[in-house]
Image (cartoon, rainbow, N blue to C red):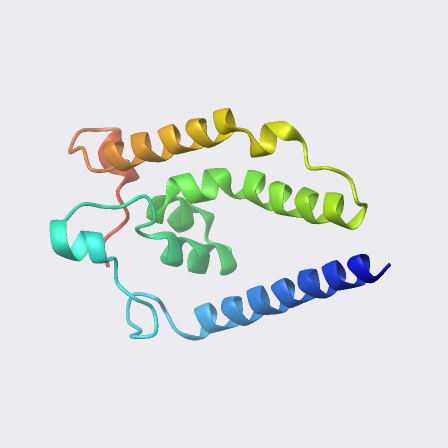
Length: 139
């Protein structure tokens, strides 16, 4: 029982932290605020990392603007349903004291996720259509 109570408190703390982060994101527009850091890789090399535009994508998503959220970071928006499901199921499995399925923690899954992220990183820096649509909108 003590473990479940602790897990519930962790889940509530994560929800509170997410709510605070969402409120801060809505209160201060990421492109014009000094509170949000700029991408170091982009500033040094001019290349878009897989996370470039993610903060603005979440901002647009919180405002209900799915089009701009997709244009800022399509990989994040496409993977968000899976990431939310994964987090929910992991907390649920921990709460019910069940083992997490092995495929979610397997090396094969990690390799595929890494390959997808690297392919996205390369693709979003190519200047040809359709890859140039993966680059974040400029502000």
